Amino acid sequence: MNRFDKKVELRLPDSLKWSGVDRLFKGEDLLPLWVADMDFEAPAPVLEAIRRRVDAGLLTYTELPSSLFEAVAGWLDRRFHWKVDTSDLLFAPGVVTLLKAAVRAFTQPGDRVIVQPPVYGPFGEAVTGQGRELALNPLKVEQGKYTMDFEDLEAKLRLTGAKLLLLCSPHNPTGRVWEKAELNRLAALCSAYGVTVASDEIHSDLILTGVHTPIASLPGMAERTVTFIAPSKTFNLAGLHTSFAVATDETLRKGLDQALGHRGAEPVVDRGGGGGLPGRRRMAGGLPDVFARQCVFRGRLFGRAAAGGDRLRARSDLPAVGRPAPVRFKPNRARRPSGQGSARRRERRRRLRERGRRTRPH
Ligand SMILES: Cc1ncc(COP(=O)(O)O)c(C=O)c1O
Image (cartoon, rainbow, N blue to C red; front, side, top):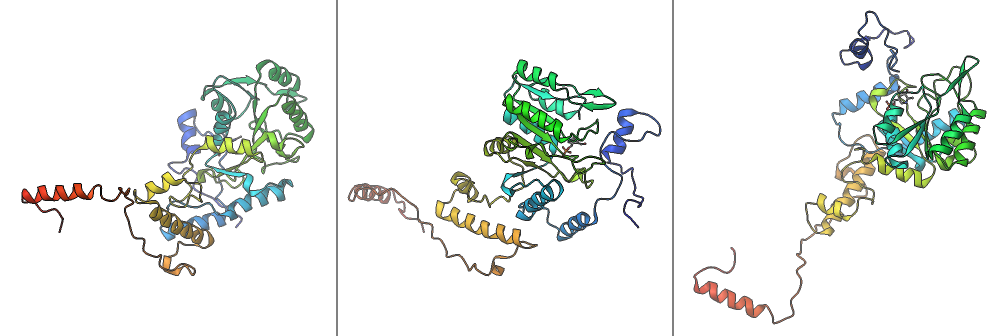
């Protein structure tokens, strides 16, 4: 049976979509069209991978494998002929998280941000909820279809000095798949006014007619755009909290990465050389640096083994790793000039002897 024909239990007790419709809209027999979750089972390979992981009994910190980034880059190339480097990708737990991070990264409190209503609610919240102000550029309806109002946009850019535009492409809720000509016009205005574009392209795989064009793939736009994508709508996986940003420009990527902060996906020990010595020292419980380095070294080997295979292997299974040479802890005392100190020590021992106390521990 085709999985789209399979009947699934819809009203799971913790389903936001189904329980939320009763709570928020309080009607009888309402269809919950307010959340873009589909009533189909998730794809079999995804369910199998999760089952394997659960059966292994380990839900610990996980390293993001390079194959994940390659899969994302490959998808963008095959679907949209958009070539991105895996190093341009940032992992994030959600597109709304990314929208909020973009507002923090590319604007200051009090700045104006362009948003094009009617649009998915969290766009506005990402702006006003973080102390920035909305500069609205409402869509207009022309011959029964929503279009962008470019005259109004130019006026808003000129008058508000906005330096960030949150684009929804394809657009939710109007369903518009922006045409290349429309995106080119938007791009020209953003370039002319030095505006960064944060483009939410979460719905780009679900298109009935037309062709999705990533705005970052247009000439001159890669250096001023961050694009947000996810498998959550396409494959009905919203609860897995997996999304990505594509940020080709290094400054934008670093800014976004910093605003995202720690995402909890890296293993504790393997900081890939970027962890910094203070962190390593803390991890090694305050022991001297040479011991800390040994821990980091072993951690890296484990991390690599885990990324390359299915399970974390015991140290003895690793072909190239023998028993690490024991490290002797030698306190690094500052040396006193010879002669000094020893006289003082002798005098101290003499006084302790007189008091009948031992000078050395057993
Ligand atoms: C346009 C748009 N962006 C983002 C999201 C939510 O993304 P996430 O769950 O990854 O935060 C939705 C959900 O429906 C959406 O329609």
